[in-house]
Image 1: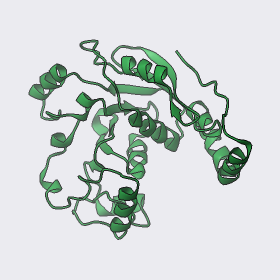
Image 2: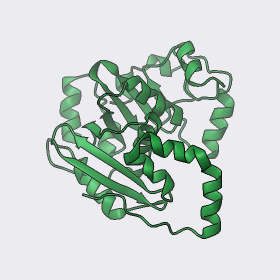
Image 3: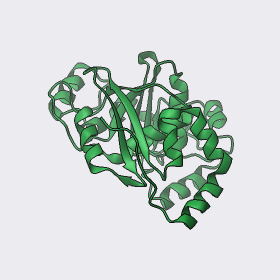
Length: 253
């Protein structure tokens, strides 16, 4: 088990510029959620506190130190997020941890992140797919690129909104089951929000997410350009016509 204990390695001028840029905003973020938020003030050092609902294991891991992924921490997370049915780990995509960390920070939670599902071996995923159409045949879980999470005491609608605001991967909302699916594949969300709901989430209209009517909001093209500039995968988000004919389970879960 690891806990954040990092020392900044930035130069004084760079560190000063960073503090000036974030200022009071960074301090406000830190005060909202002590566990994970503290990383904001430590040179981009990020920690996650997780509880696995199936294995009943708990862990606090600092997976990024001063902007660099910690290899030992990633290995620890690979095992923690293993296929619990077969005890088989895989190499999880580190960007997934950044997404989960950012969502946690956004909602200001101070509880362990409950893991409903992480890595699934092909055998496990195949078994689940045969049992339910709600499990994708080629799930991102098999690639170590997806996690289903829950935050006890937190409205999962807020978690869904935080994930969608990132526009950095897939967000699946399973409200009746009490969890949200997050992945690092194409920017997309299911089920789709209504136009009113999406406009409320993105008041400036700048999003590649599409509402249930399939018609992009006013800032779609600008948002798409920004994502492409940072090499985001918007392949799915850019398909307003055929996307509506695909069931959410066929995309992922």
